[in-house]
Amino acid sequence: MGPMNFFIYKGRCSKDFGVYISGDQTFNAPERDMESIEIPGKNGNLTISRNRFKNISISYTAFIRRNFRVNSNGMKKWLLNGDGYSRLEDTYHPEFYRMAQFIGPVSFDMHFLNRAGEMTLTFDCKPQRWRKDGETPIPLSEHNSLYNELFPALPLIKVNGTAAGNLYVGSYTVEIKELDGYIMIDCESQNAYKDTLNKNNTILTKAFPVLQPGENTISWDGGISDIEITPRWWTI
Image 1 (cartoon, rainbow, N blue to C red):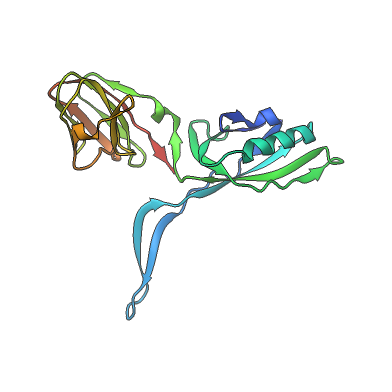
Image 2: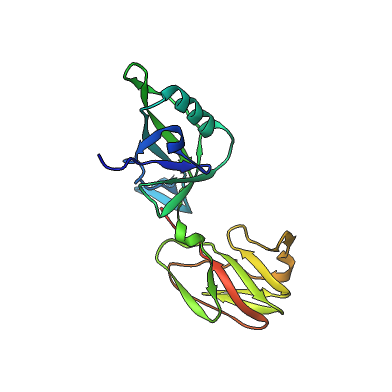
């Protein structure tokens, strides 16, 4: 028998509760969000993309084979305590993580005189599979480029410097009107900040930068000295 697989959720490992998994249902992809319109007098439907993916259900066939009573009680408290999305990882896809929430239920198929049980644990997941290496800031001390082999990514950019300047990411330009030390530009939340201070009034841009698929040239001018870019690579 090979090594048993497990998952990590809310910072806790399923092994802590004697829970091991089969991940045969973790390789699925989400559904595109499309609107289908029927037009009188025309054959077929018109489809309009909403430019997004829908949430996806990820299920693990899981089992507890030892200390069932204690482990099952601990597992239920762990999975069902709290609301909102949390990080979900598993040993089938060690280079990725998802943002997921467990809603339940937990239903056991009991074995061996009620000393072991199997169940299906289903998580409601956001569609992205985030690549772990996309969480690491990439320092750039000179003009360079980043290649994106996946989907359009919304990076977090730390801009260092002592005076105003312009940041160029592909076809995007961010004018930084004030710069004293550094500024963080979060392209996902579309905010600029320094520590706890909102700095949206110190930047000007038509659109926050996106790392498009392919090559993305990155440069700057003025009082900007260097940058750190956390790319947030993802796929489905």
